[in-house]
Image (cartoon, rainbow, N blue to C red; front, side, top):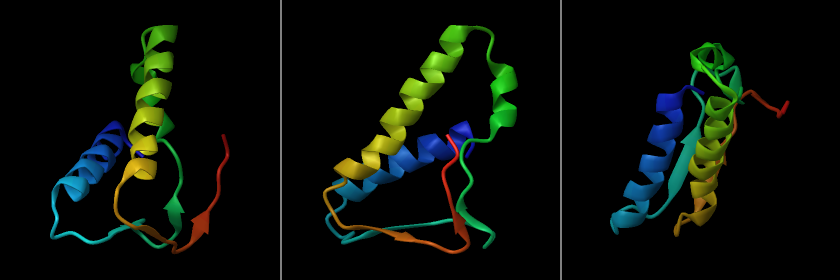
Length: 86
């Protein structure tokens, strides 16, 4: 996932909670090969210091953790691989 995708995930969770007409959040991957393949590590070249890496971890945890706080049912529509490597 790119930085923008993490931001959009967080923002979507906020929008879902704020909109009473939305009854469920369905998350699915694109492309059919994997549900999610993790962070796009090519972005790590943007890090200028160790603090940048720590900030990435904090922001990523905050943004993905937002899914657990959605007040409506959340469904993961899995198509393809769904593995974790880190």
